[in-house]
Structure formats: C-alpha cells, structure tokens
Length: 448
Image (tube, rainbow, N blue to C red; front, side, top):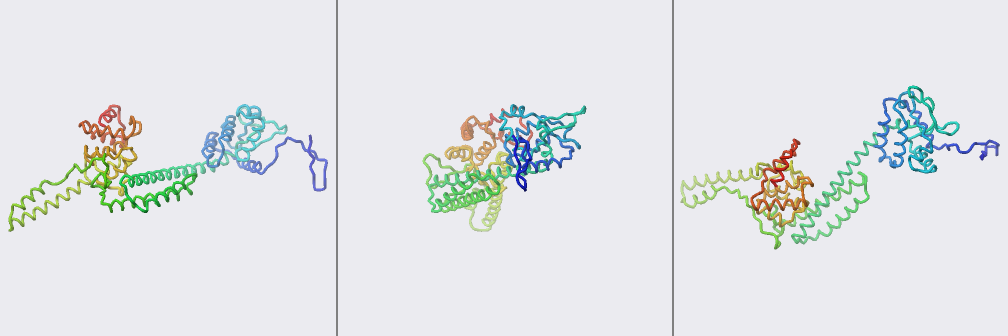
C-alpha cells in the first residue's frame, strides 16, 4: 500500500512507504538530547539510579521504569565512554515476551518512553533493530534504542530526586505535627468531659478543629499542608489555653493534686503528695518561739527562725529541679523525649514533669485510676519517672500494651519488688549508644 502526498500545486505522484515511524515534537526533542551526549565518567548504574530516584517527582510510572530497566540489561560500560553511544537493539518479539505485552502495547510503550525524553529511536534502513561490536566490545554499528538522553539529563534527575526527598521529609514532618495537634485536642476534649466543664466556647472550638482536620485530607504537597497544619496547631493551642482558664476559674490545681476534676469520680482515690520536703527544724523553731517570752532572746530566736525558713525555701527550690532517684528533670527528658511536647520550657521542675506525665498517660493508655494508684504507691515523682520509662521503651518490649506494662510496674511497687534504678540505668545505656548486652537486657526486664 502507498500513500499519496499532496503538494502545493496539487496531487503529485510521490509515493511514500508506509510503516515508517511518524516524526513528532517529542521525537525531535529526544533526538536533540541524544546529540548532546559526549560521554564521560557516567556508568550505566549511575544513570539508571538517577532516573529511578527522580521517577516519582516526574510522575514516571513503574511500568515505564521497568521497561527502561530491562533495556539497560543490554548496554555495557564502554558504551558510555567519550566517542561512543549507548544504543541497545533487542528485537520487538523479545521485548514483548520479556515484558509480557502484546506487539501493539510494546509500540505504545516505546512511543511513551520517547515522549518522556528517556530514549531516542535510531531506525535502520530496513526498519529492523540490529548492531555489531568490534573485538574490544565497542559498538561499530547499531540501530535501536539510544539511552543517551538519560545520561544527558542525569544532573536534572539528581536535582529532582533531592528536591523530592526534601519535599517528602517536609511533608512527613508536617503530618507528625498534625498528629501531635490532634492528640492534644483529644486530650483537651477528654479533660473537658471528665471534669464536666461547661464552656460556651467549646462547641466553636470543636467545629473549628473538625474543619481544620478536614482541610488536611487530600493535601500531599508542602505548600498546601503548611497552612492547614498551622491552623490546626493554632486551634489546639487555643483550646488548651481555654481549658487552663476554665480549670483555674474552678480552682483546680495544676500540680498540687493529680485529680483534676473538682467533682471527682467514685472510682478514683483522693491523691495527695507523699514526698513531703518540709524541714523538721521549722517545727522546732515554732515550738521554741512559743516557749520564749518577749524580749531579746525572743528577737534573736525569731531572726534565727527567719534564716532557717530562707534556707528551707532554697532547699525546696533545689529539690524541684534536683535529683530524684539520682536523675534530674533535664536528663529524664533526654532519655524519655516523649515528655517534651507536654512541657512549656526546656528546663522544667519536678512538678512540671509530673503534670506532663499526667498528659502523657493518655497516649500510653494508662487510665486515671491506675495513675492515681501509682502516685499513691510510688510517690508522684517516682510515678512520673516510671511512666517516662514506659514511654521510652520500644513496642516489642510490651506483651500486651504500654498501659498493661505500667500496671505491672504499679503491682510490683505495691509488693516492694519494683527496682526503678536498674531501669533508669538501662535507659541511660541505651541513650548513650553504648548498647546493652544480653545480661543487661535481662536485668532491665526484671527491674520493671
């Protein structure tokens, strides 16, 4: 069969053989890329790796990558040297059989590779793919797939891959921030419910949080996710501030009592601080002042009492930031970093650590009654340390859940079999990166 071409002056008897490849703008662009190939230090593995890493950024399908990967099986390192050309010539029947496609699908796939600017086609006079190499393995003549466009674009692929990795890392960070904000909102709503707080602004805050969460759906770029996450974090912070204001109006102490609900629950025991740090000399001084009458001795005794009171106050301040079980608050944050997101400053005191642990228990599945039992049995600071230890352990250390593990620690504390010192030592070893040998792991397991 022949096709007749119509010229400017009418129909001419110029016959063109059918079956030749149609020239398209994409084919011309691929040919121009191939002409820029000069060869160099690029290896086939480097070129293919650059393409694969940039494929998600350019939206190149896995099927196209698989087809290019298959073509690279036929190229050799010397084809990429200066003065050479990386051309491969597998037959159409082999390509169809190897890729599991029909002849028609293979033609469409090859055209798609050309349109992507990954290969250029080198057609022979008889429209067949073939080639031959000399004794050194260099290509003397070849017709088929020219892979040089990939080598020409290797810097473009590497830059795109780096940008894609940075974008995905930023998106992952934004999604973690969104998860933290959602968890904060859940904790806030739960506290509102547990404490039966009536706040007129609560409904509006919940609606705003729901709308902000919906705005996150379907967004997979940093530009669209950033404002949505910032909005959700702003709502979470506003809700937390509103909760703090309502709790302060109702006279609920933040660190004086573990029980935050003013009405209380029948299943939650009343909890008071067990680690009293009062100086016994205060009682002595008070008794001495009662025994002395007015006069010079009473004045001197009162002055000494004031000095003792000042030293006692300074010791209380030091205790708030000092060591409990030979560990300071800042060191506890290093080995148990999950407490940090519930703290307002980087150098907290022990009461602030206890408050943060009370919020962290929601994430670990520790109920409020169990937390109350832990504070009564261990003391508030030791209970916070135990909860921090649980938060720092990997999930595989738990037989059932983190909450169940903490319940076991409370039960051992009630029988006097809990040894937190060993667990703290184990976390220090793990945090320092020295590693823990098998015997150390056994001792940690026994301790908790």
